[in-house]
Image (tube, rainbow, N blue to C red; front, side):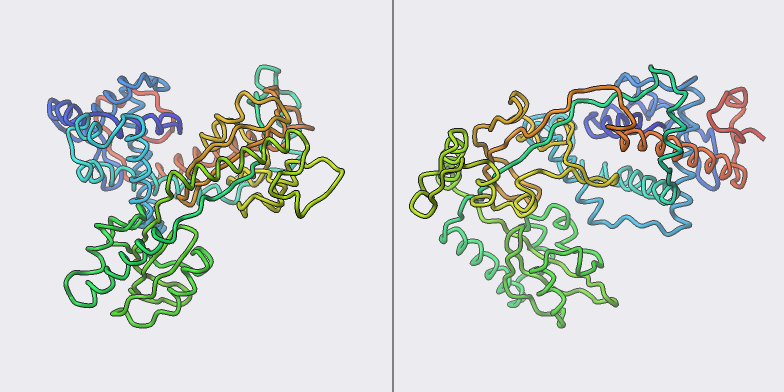
Length: 468
Protein backbone atom coordinates (compact mmCIF):
# COMPACT_ATOMS: atom_id res chain seq x y z
CA UNK A 1 0.00 0.00 0.00
CA UNK A 2 1.44 3.35 -0.97
CA UNK A 3 1.99 5.82 1.85
CA UNK A 4 -1.02 7.97 0.92
CA UNK A 5 -3.19 4.86 0.81
CA UNK A 6 -1.91 3.84 4.22
CA UNK A 7 -2.76 7.26 5.67
CA UNK A 8 -6.28 7.00 4.28
CA UNK A 9 -6.56 3.48 5.68
CA UNK A 10 -5.54 4.66 9.17
CA UNK A 11 -7.85 7.67 8.87
CA UNK A 12 -10.74 5.35 8.17
CA UNK A 13 -9.88 3.22 11.17
CA UNK A 14 -9.94 6.32 13.34
CA UNK A 15 -13.30 7.66 12.20
CA UNK A 16 -15.37 4.67 11.06
CA UNK A 17 -18.05 3.38 13.45
CA UNK A 18 -16.55 0.12 14.67
CA UNK A 19 -19.92 -1.62 14.69
CA UNK A 20 -20.24 -1.23 10.93
CA UNK A 21 -16.81 -2.74 10.33
CA UNK A 22 -17.56 -5.70 12.55
CA UNK A 23 -20.90 -6.28 10.85
CA UNK A 24 -19.24 -6.31 7.42
CA UNK A 25 -16.49 -8.62 8.62
CA UNK A 26 -18.93 -11.02 10.20
CA UNK A 27 -20.97 -11.22 6.98
CA UNK A 28 -17.98 -12.85 5.24
CA UNK A 29 -17.50 -16.59 5.55
CA UNK A 30 -13.91 -16.59 6.76
CA UNK A 31 -11.13 -18.56 5.18
CA UNK A 32 -7.37 -18.30 4.87
CA UNK A 33 -6.60 -16.88 1.41
CA UNK A 34 -2.83 -16.33 1.78
CA UNK A 35 -0.13 -17.49 4.17
CA UNK A 36 3.08 -15.48 4.55
CA UNK A 37 5.65 -17.18 6.76
CA UNK A 38 3.47 -18.35 9.65
CA UNK A 39 1.02 -15.44 9.31
CA UNK A 40 -2.38 -16.11 7.68
CA UNK A 41 -4.35 -13.50 5.74
CA UNK A 42 -8.07 -14.00 6.17
CA UNK A 43 -10.75 -13.27 3.62
CA UNK A 44 -12.43 -11.04 6.20
CA UNK A 45 -9.28 -8.89 6.41
CA UNK A 46 -9.35 -8.43 2.65
CA UNK A 47 -13.03 -7.56 2.60
CA UNK A 48 -12.88 -5.09 5.48
CA UNK A 49 -9.91 -3.35 3.83
CA UNK A 50 -11.86 -3.20 0.56
CA UNK A 51 -14.88 -1.62 2.32
CA UNK A 52 -12.72 0.91 4.13
CA UNK A 53 -10.97 1.91 0.91
CA UNK A 54 -14.23 2.21 -1.06
CA UNK A 55 -15.86 4.43 1.56
CA UNK A 56 -12.83 6.74 1.53
CA UNK A 57 -12.76 6.88 -2.26
CA UNK A 58 -9.34 5.26 -2.45
CA UNK A 59 -8.25 3.65 -5.71
CA UNK A 60 -5.91 0.68 -5.88
CA UNK A 61 -3.20 0.24 -8.45
CA UNK A 62 -4.46 -2.65 -10.56
CA UNK A 63 -7.18 -5.11 -9.63
CA UNK A 64 -8.24 -4.61 -5.97
CA UNK A 65 -8.89 -8.35 -5.64
CA UNK A 66 -5.16 -8.82 -6.17
CA UNK A 67 -3.71 -5.58 -4.79
CA UNK A 68 -5.38 -5.72 -1.37
CA UNK A 69 -4.14 -9.15 -0.22
CA UNK A 70 -0.73 -8.42 -1.75
CA UNK A 71 -0.30 -5.26 0.30
CA UNK A 72 -1.51 -7.01 3.46
CA UNK A 73 1.13 -9.64 2.73
CA UNK A 74 3.83 -6.98 2.26
CA UNK A 75 2.98 -5.48 5.64
CA UNK A 76 3.41 -8.89 7.24
CA UNK A 77 6.86 -9.20 5.63
CA UNK A 78 7.95 -5.93 7.19
CA UNK A 79 6.48 -6.86 10.57
CA UNK A 80 8.21 -10.23 10.52
CA UNK A 81 11.57 -8.61 9.73
CA UNK A 82 11.00 -5.98 12.42
CA UNK A 83 10.57 -8.78 14.96
CA UNK A 84 13.76 -10.50 13.73
CA UNK A 85 15.70 -7.21 13.95
CA UNK A 86 14.30 -6.45 17.42
CA UNK A 87 12.73 -3.20 16.24
CA UNK A 88 10.94 -1.72 19.23
CA UNK A 89 8.09 0.69 19.71
CA UNK A 90 7.51 1.49 23.37
CA UNK A 91 4.08 1.49 24.96
CA UNK A 92 4.53 5.15 25.84
CA UNK A 93 5.13 5.99 22.16
CA UNK A 94 2.04 4.08 21.07
CA UNK A 95 -0.01 5.65 23.84
CA UNK A 96 1.19 9.14 22.92
CA UNK A 97 0.31 8.57 19.26
CA UNK A 98 -3.14 7.25 20.23
CA UNK A 99 -3.81 10.31 22.39
CA UNK A 100 -2.76 12.63 19.57
CA UNK A 101 -5.18 10.91 17.20
CA UNK A 102 -7.99 10.96 19.74
CA UNK A 103 -7.39 14.67 20.33
CA UNK A 104 -7.52 15.21 16.56
CA UNK A 105 -10.76 13.25 16.26
CA UNK A 106 -12.31 15.20 19.13
CA UNK A 107 -11.37 18.48 17.45
CA UNK A 108 -12.93 17.32 14.18
CA UNK A 109 -16.16 15.95 15.64
CA UNK A 110 -16.70 18.49 18.42
CA UNK A 111 -16.43 16.65 21.73
CA UNK A 112 -15.49 13.35 23.35
CA UNK A 113 -19.15 12.57 23.91
CA UNK A 114 -19.93 13.00 20.21
CA UNK A 115 -16.94 10.83 19.30
CA UNK A 116 -18.10 8.05 21.62
CA UNK A 117 -21.61 8.28 20.18
CA UNK A 118 -20.30 8.17 16.59
CA UNK A 119 -17.92 5.27 17.17
CA UNK A 120 -20.36 3.46 19.50
CA UNK A 121 -17.46 2.98 21.92
CA UNK A 122 -16.12 4.61 25.06
CA UNK A 123 -12.84 6.53 24.80
CA UNK A 124 -11.16 3.62 26.57
CA UNK A 125 -12.52 1.16 24.00
CA UNK A 126 -11.42 3.43 21.14
CA UNK A 127 -7.90 3.42 22.57
CA UNK A 128 -7.90 -0.38 22.72
CA UNK A 129 -9.28 -0.76 19.20
CA UNK A 130 -6.58 1.53 17.79
CA UNK A 131 -3.66 0.09 19.74
CA UNK A 132 -2.49 -2.94 17.75
CA UNK A 133 -2.94 -1.43 14.28
CA UNK A 134 -1.13 1.74 15.26
CA UNK A 135 1.71 -0.17 16.90
CA UNK A 136 2.11 -2.33 13.78
CA UNK A 137 2.18 0.70 11.50
CA UNK A 138 4.85 2.32 13.68
CA UNK A 139 6.87 -0.91 13.57
CA UNK A 140 6.57 -1.09 9.77
CA UNK A 141 7.65 2.54 9.42
CA UNK A 142 10.71 1.99 11.62
CA UNK A 143 11.65 -1.12 9.69
CA UNK A 144 11.46 0.80 6.42
CA UNK A 145 13.53 3.64 7.87
CA UNK A 146 16.20 1.17 8.94
CA UNK A 147 16.35 -0.38 5.46
CA UNK A 148 16.84 2.97 3.68
CA UNK A 149 18.83 4.92 6.28
CA UNK A 150 22.17 4.60 4.45
CA UNK A 151 20.90 5.69 1.02
CA UNK A 152 22.44 8.95 -0.19
CA UNK A 153 22.64 10.88 -3.47
CA UNK A 154 25.27 13.30 -4.75
CA UNK A 155 24.62 16.65 -6.45
CA UNK A 156 25.89 15.13 -9.71
CA UNK A 157 23.32 12.32 -9.45
CA UNK A 158 20.54 14.85 -8.87
CA UNK A 159 21.57 16.87 -11.93
CA UNK A 160 21.76 13.74 -14.09
CA UNK A 161 18.31 12.60 -12.96
CA UNK A 162 16.62 15.85 -13.95
CA UNK A 163 18.73 16.63 -17.04
CA UNK A 164 16.54 14.77 -19.50
CA UNK A 165 13.29 14.86 -17.54
CA UNK A 166 10.30 16.36 -19.35
CA UNK A 167 8.87 19.68 -18.14
CA UNK A 168 5.72 17.95 -16.93
CA UNK A 169 7.78 15.69 -14.66
CA UNK A 170 9.64 18.51 -12.88
CA UNK A 171 8.25 18.77 -9.31
CA UNK A 172 6.10 21.76 -8.40
CA UNK A 173 7.15 23.57 -5.23
CA UNK A 174 4.08 24.91 -3.35
CA UNK A 175 4.08 28.43 -1.95
CA UNK A 176 6.45 28.74 0.99
CA UNK A 177 6.81 31.42 3.64
CA UNK A 178 9.38 32.63 6.17
CA UNK A 179 7.92 33.88 9.45
CA UNK A 180 9.32 35.78 12.43
CA UNK A 181 7.56 35.77 15.78
CA UNK A 182 7.64 37.57 19.12
CA UNK A 183 6.15 35.57 21.97
CA UNK A 184 5.07 36.36 25.48
CA UNK A 185 4.18 33.67 27.98
CA UNK A 186 1.35 34.87 30.25
CA UNK A 187 2.23 34.91 33.93
CA UNK A 188 0.70 32.26 36.15
CA UNK A 189 -0.59 33.60 39.45
CA UNK A 190 1.13 32.65 42.71
CA UNK A 191 -2.18 31.20 43.91
CA UNK A 192 -2.35 28.88 40.90
CA UNK A 193 1.25 27.75 41.32
CA UNK A 194 0.59 26.97 44.99
CA UNK A 195 -2.58 25.05 44.07
CA UNK A 196 -0.66 22.78 41.68
CA UNK A 197 2.18 22.23 44.16
CA UNK A 198 -0.29 21.42 46.95
CA UNK A 199 -1.95 18.82 44.73
CA UNK A 200 1.40 17.14 44.04
CA UNK A 201 2.30 17.19 47.75
CA UNK A 202 -1.06 15.55 48.49
CA UNK A 203 -0.33 12.80 45.93
CA UNK A 204 3.03 12.14 47.59
CA UNK A 205 1.44 11.97 51.05
CA UNK A 206 -1.26 9.55 49.86
CA UNK A 207 1.33 7.18 48.39
CA UNK A 208 3.55 7.42 51.48
CA UNK A 209 0.56 6.63 53.73
CA UNK A 210 -0.19 3.55 51.64
CA UNK A 211 -3.66 4.80 50.62
CA UNK A 212 -3.00 4.28 46.91
CA UNK A 213 -0.22 3.69 44.41
CA UNK A 214 1.74 6.17 42.35
CA UNK A 215 0.54 4.42 39.17
CA UNK A 216 -3.13 4.84 40.10
CA UNK A 217 -2.71 8.56 40.78
CA UNK A 218 -0.80 8.99 37.50
CA UNK A 219 -3.62 7.36 35.55
CA UNK A 220 -6.16 9.58 37.27
CA UNK A 221 -4.42 12.95 37.39
CA UNK A 222 -1.28 13.16 35.24
CA UNK A 223 -1.49 15.61 32.33
CA UNK A 224 1.15 13.81 30.26
CA UNK A 225 -0.94 11.94 27.66
CA UNK A 226 2.04 9.88 26.53
CA UNK A 227 2.59 8.17 29.89
CA UNK A 228 -0.69 8.53 31.77
CA UNK A 229 -2.17 5.28 30.46
CA UNK A 230 0.93 3.40 31.66
CA UNK A 231 0.63 4.77 35.16
CA UNK A 232 3.07 7.59 34.40
CA UNK A 233 5.80 5.22 33.23
CA UNK A 234 8.57 6.44 30.93
CA UNK A 235 10.62 3.67 29.32
CA UNK A 236 14.42 3.55 29.62
CA UNK A 237 15.61 7.00 28.61
CA UNK A 238 18.94 8.77 28.36
CA UNK A 239 19.62 12.06 30.12
CA UNK A 240 19.90 14.05 26.88
CA UNK A 241 16.33 13.27 25.79
CA UNK A 242 14.76 14.59 29.01
CA UNK A 243 14.10 18.13 30.16
CA UNK A 244 17.32 19.19 32.01
CA UNK A 245 15.55 20.02 35.28
CA UNK A 246 13.59 16.74 35.16
CA UNK A 247 16.74 14.74 34.33
CA UNK A 248 18.76 16.34 37.14
CA UNK A 249 16.30 15.06 39.74
CA UNK A 250 15.40 11.74 38.08
CA UNK A 251 19.00 10.57 37.67
CA UNK A 252 19.74 11.33 41.34
CA UNK A 253 16.96 9.07 42.61
CA UNK A 254 18.24 5.88 44.25
CA UNK A 255 15.30 4.46 46.24
CA UNK A 256 12.27 3.17 44.26
CA UNK A 257 10.13 3.54 47.39
CA UNK A 258 10.67 7.27 47.64
CA UNK A 259 9.08 10.05 45.60
CA UNK A 260 11.08 13.03 44.43
CA UNK A 261 10.61 16.62 45.45
CA UNK A 262 8.46 18.74 43.12
CA UNK A 263 10.28 19.49 39.87
CA UNK A 264 9.49 22.38 37.54
CA UNK A 265 10.21 21.76 33.86
CA UNK A 266 9.26 23.47 30.61
CA UNK A 267 6.10 21.34 30.59
CA UNK A 268 4.84 22.05 34.12
CA UNK A 269 5.40 20.53 37.58
CA UNK A 270 6.26 16.88 38.27
CA UNK A 271 6.81 14.36 40.98
CA UNK A 272 8.97 11.37 39.98
CA UNK A 273 9.43 7.81 41.19
CA UNK A 274 12.37 5.61 40.22
CA UNK A 275 11.67 2.19 38.67
CA UNK A 276 15.10 1.03 37.49
CA UNK A 277 18.50 2.15 36.25
CA UNK A 278 20.33 0.40 33.42
CA UNK A 279 23.73 1.80 32.48
CA UNK A 280 23.30 5.40 31.36
CA UNK A 281 19.52 5.06 31.05
CA UNK A 282 16.80 5.39 33.62
CA UNK A 283 13.23 4.13 33.89
CA UNK A 284 10.88 6.25 35.97
CA UNK A 285 7.22 7.11 36.38
CA UNK A 286 5.96 10.64 36.91
CA UNK A 287 2.87 12.76 37.42
CA UNK A 288 2.67 16.01 35.48
CA UNK A 289 0.40 18.89 36.47
CA UNK A 290 0.12 22.09 34.47
CA UNK A 291 -0.86 25.41 36.06
CA UNK A 292 -3.86 27.05 34.40
CA UNK A 293 -3.28 30.48 32.89
CA UNK A 294 -6.06 32.94 33.69
CA UNK A 295 -7.93 34.85 30.99
CA UNK A 296 -6.78 38.11 32.54
CA UNK A 297 -3.12 37.07 32.22
CA UNK A 298 -3.63 36.10 28.56
CA UNK A 299 -5.36 39.41 27.85
CA UNK A 300 -2.51 41.32 29.52
CA UNK A 301 0.05 39.60 27.28
CA UNK A 302 -2.07 40.22 24.18
CA UNK A 303 -2.36 43.89 25.12
CA UNK A 304 1.41 44.19 25.58
CA UNK A 305 2.04 42.58 22.18
CA UNK A 306 -0.50 44.88 20.57
CA UNK A 307 1.42 47.89 21.92
CA UNK A 308 4.71 46.44 20.69
CA UNK A 309 3.28 45.73 17.22
CA UNK A 310 1.87 49.25 16.94
CA UNK A 311 5.24 50.75 17.92
CA UNK A 312 7.10 48.60 15.37
CA UNK A 313 4.70 49.60 12.60
CA UNK A 314 5.34 53.26 13.42
CA UNK A 315 9.06 52.72 14.00
CA UNK A 316 8.74 54.19 17.49
CA UNK A 317 10.26 52.93 20.71
CA UNK A 318 7.48 51.22 22.73
CA UNK A 319 6.22 53.41 25.61
CA UNK A 320 7.48 51.07 28.33
CA UNK A 321 11.05 51.39 26.97
CA UNK A 322 11.22 55.15 26.46
CA UNK A 323 12.56 55.93 29.95
CA UNK A 324 15.48 53.52 29.41
CA UNK A 325 16.02 53.70 25.64
CA UNK A 326 16.52 56.81 23.54
CA UNK A 327 17.43 56.39 19.88
CA UNK A 328 16.88 58.19 16.62
CA UNK A 329 16.79 54.91 14.72
CA UNK A 330 13.56 53.07 13.94
CA UNK A 331 12.47 50.40 16.39
CA UNK A 332 12.26 47.20 14.32
CA UNK A 333 10.66 43.79 14.69
CA UNK A 334 14.14 42.38 15.33
CA UNK A 335 14.57 44.88 18.18
CA UNK A 336 11.24 43.70 19.58
CA UNK A 337 12.44 40.09 19.48
CA UNK A 338 15.63 40.95 21.35
CA UNK A 339 13.86 42.93 24.08
CA UNK A 340 10.52 41.19 24.55
CA UNK A 341 10.40 37.64 23.11
CA UNK A 342 10.70 34.76 25.56
CA UNK A 343 10.75 31.97 22.97
CA UNK A 344 14.21 30.47 23.29
CA UNK A 345 13.91 28.59 19.97
CA UNK A 346 13.61 31.77 17.90
CA UNK A 347 14.91 34.63 20.06
CA UNK A 348 18.56 34.14 19.09
CA UNK A 349 17.64 33.99 15.38
CA UNK A 350 15.87 37.38 15.22
CA UNK A 351 12.54 35.64 15.71
CA UNK A 352 12.82 33.52 12.56
CA UNK A 353 10.98 30.21 12.87
CA UNK A 354 12.86 27.03 11.91
CA UNK A 355 11.27 24.12 10.05
CA UNK A 356 13.00 21.00 11.37
CA UNK A 357 12.41 17.63 9.74
CA UNK A 358 14.26 14.44 8.80
CA UNK A 359 15.52 16.36 5.73
CA UNK A 360 17.30 18.90 7.93
CA UNK A 361 16.47 22.46 8.92
CA UNK A 362 15.19 25.37 6.84
CA UNK A 363 13.44 28.67 7.46
CA UNK A 364 10.87 27.92 4.76
CA UNK A 365 7.44 26.50 5.56
CA UNK A 366 4.56 25.38 3.44
CA UNK A 367 1.43 26.79 5.04
CA UNK A 368 0.26 23.40 6.34
CA UNK A 369 3.61 22.90 8.10
CA UNK A 370 3.14 25.97 10.31
CA UNK A 371 1.21 25.83 13.58
CA UNK A 372 -2.42 26.39 12.60
CA UNK A 373 -2.71 29.68 14.49
CA UNK A 374 0.46 31.09 12.91
CA UNK A 375 -0.65 30.02 9.42
CA UNK A 376 -4.02 31.71 9.91
CA UNK A 377 -2.35 34.90 11.16
CA UNK A 378 0.08 35.30 8.24
CA UNK A 379 -2.08 33.90 5.44
CA UNK A 380 -3.42 37.30 4.35
CA UNK A 381 -0.37 39.42 5.26
CA UNK A 382 1.83 41.14 2.72
CA UNK A 383 5.58 40.64 3.07
CA UNK A 384 6.81 42.87 5.90
CA UNK A 385 3.44 43.18 7.63
CA UNK A 386 2.83 42.24 11.26
CA UNK A 387 -0.20 40.27 12.46
CA UNK A 388 -2.64 41.11 15.21
CA UNK A 389 -1.70 39.41 18.52
CA UNK A 390 -3.13 35.92 19.10
CA UNK A 391 -2.76 33.07 21.59
CA UNK A 392 -1.96 29.41 20.98
CA UNK A 393 -0.68 26.27 22.67
CA UNK A 394 3.00 25.67 21.88
CA UNK A 395 4.82 22.36 21.42
CA UNK A 396 5.43 22.14 25.16
CA UNK A 397 1.72 22.38 25.90
CA UNK A 398 1.89 25.93 27.26
CA UNK A 399 -0.31 28.89 26.41
CA UNK A 400 1.70 31.61 24.66
CA UNK A 401 0.75 34.91 23.03
CA UNK A 402 2.27 35.81 19.69
CA UNK A 403 2.66 38.45 17.01
CA UNK A 404 4.00 37.24 13.67
CA UNK A 405 5.71 39.02 10.77
CA UNK A 406 5.68 37.66 7.23
CA UNK A 407 9.35 37.99 6.35
CA UNK A 408 9.17 36.41 2.91
CA UNK A 409 6.81 34.57 0.57
CA UNK A 410 8.09 32.34 -2.23
CA UNK A 411 5.26 31.73 -4.68
CA UNK A 412 4.63 28.24 -6.00
CA UNK A 413 6.79 27.33 -8.99
CA UNK A 414 8.48 24.56 -10.93
CA UNK A 415 11.62 23.47 -9.10
CA UNK A 416 14.99 24.64 -10.38
CA UNK A 417 18.36 23.15 -9.52
CA UNK A 418 19.72 26.51 -8.35
CA UNK A 419 16.79 27.60 -6.15
CA UNK A 420 15.28 24.29 -5.04
CA UNK A 421 18.13 21.81 -4.92
CA UNK A 422 16.91 20.27 -1.66
CA UNK A 423 13.46 19.64 -3.14
CA UNK A 424 14.97 17.96 -6.19
CA UNK A 425 17.40 15.98 -4.06
CA UNK A 426 14.47 14.73 -1.96
CA UNK A 427 12.72 13.53 -5.14
CA UNK A 428 15.75 11.49 -6.17
CA UNK A 429 16.23 10.18 -2.62
CA UNK A 430 12.60 9.10 -2.46
CA UNK A 431 12.92 7.26 -5.79
CA UNK A 432 16.03 5.45 -4.53
CA UNK A 433 14.31 4.55 -1.28
CA UNK A 434 11.23 3.24 -3.07
CA UNK A 435 13.44 1.10 -5.31
CA UNK A 436 15.40 -0.18 -2.31
CA UNK A 437 12.19 -1.18 -0.50
CA UNK A 438 10.77 -2.76 -3.67
CA UNK A 439 13.93 -4.82 -4.17
CA UNK A 440 13.93 -5.82 -0.50
CA UNK A 441 10.33 -7.08 -0.72
CA UNK A 442 11.12 -9.12 -3.85
CA UNK A 443 14.17 -10.62 -2.13
CA UNK A 444 12.20 -11.31 1.05
CA UNK A 445 9.44 -13.08 -0.88
CA UNK A 446 12.02 -15.50 -2.30
CA UNK A 447 13.19 -16.53 1.17
CA UNK A 448 9.76 -16.67 2.86
CA UNK A 449 7.21 -19.43 2.82
CA UNK A 450 4.22 -18.21 0.81
CA UNK A 451 1.00 -20.03 0.02
CA UNK A 452 -1.62 -18.34 -2.17
CA UNK A 453 -5.18 -19.46 -2.78
CA UNK A 454 -6.01 -20.68 -6.27
CA UNK A 455 -8.26 -17.65 -6.87
CA UNK A 456 -5.18 -15.39 -6.92
CA UNK A 457 -2.87 -17.33 -9.23
CA UNK A 458 -3.87 -15.36 -12.33
CA UNK A 459 -3.21 -11.99 -10.67
CA UNK A 460 -0.71 -9.45 -11.96
CA UNK A 461 1.13 -8.45 -8.82
CA UNK A 462 3.29 -5.39 -8.12
CA UNK A 463 6.00 -7.65 -6.67
CA UNK A 464 7.29 -10.74 -8.42
CA UNK A 465 7.77 -14.11 -6.79
CA UNK A 466 4.47 -14.70 -4.98
CA UNK A 467 3.42 -17.49 -7.36
CA UNK A 468 5.73 -20.47 -7.41
